[in-house]
Image (tube, rainbow, N blue to C red; front, top):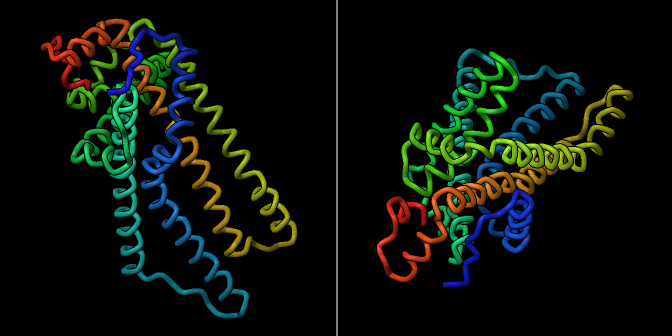
Amino acid sequence: MAEVDLRPMSLGEVLDRTFSLYKRNFWLFIGITALPFVVLLVLRVGIATLQSANIAVSRTGGNPPVFSPGMFTSAMTAGIVFGLIYLLLLGAAQAATVFAVSDLYLGRPASVRGSYGRVGGKALRVIFILILVGLAVGVGFVLLIIPGFILLCRTAVSVPASMLEGSRSIRSIERSMELTKGHAFQIFLIFLLVWVLTYVAVIIFQVPFVYFETDALKAHQTLSLGMLILQNLSTFLSEVLVGPIGTIAFSLMYYNLRVRKEAFDVQHLMASLGSQPAPGAPSAI
């Protein structure tokens, strides 16, 4: 086993290790994250192709196809199926990223195939956790803004807790509330950093196309099919490049909180020496 550096970390050290892991294992995390967004890219390109074809027919004086109730139902069904597949793959990608971070953090080799191989039916649990957290945070924002932010931060390590401890959805949320007590502000700063990086990526990859769209509107035209495909590819790149960062950071924060509050470093050392670990340690490794 490679040497493992298990110790309490400051927020700066968590972020530094986040970007170090991401940089050293760039293709691993890109490979894991790309899967759900490839499905989304196919859907977007398909929609853009249909829109472009309809516009081309209209310009030649023809009539664009009229959607019958049956065609509309088929389109809705296809959209729902695509949406479900996307959500399932998104849950699988989050789970696989957590497993990859865990392996790297504990000094074990990680691969795209190996990380996804550990997911199985846990992808559904991830989706259920995200839905429950979203509902709770949404209620918090409706009541008052601050409770919404607090709930968002306190539930931030629910997915890592569920994947690495094998706990069910509600229990993983409770576990996150236990671990993040007293550390909500640090987690809020991680969320803030991820949001900033997301908007920076959107600006870098999307601003040129906003410029082209503005010029096209002034000329009473629309973007060509090739330009629409490039626009969707740029969106895909921005999503895939930024996507893993938050999951990596919250997975590392999960371990950091366990080291701080539960002496996980000692548990792991005992397990590595062949002793019986403290309760809860095997499920977290």
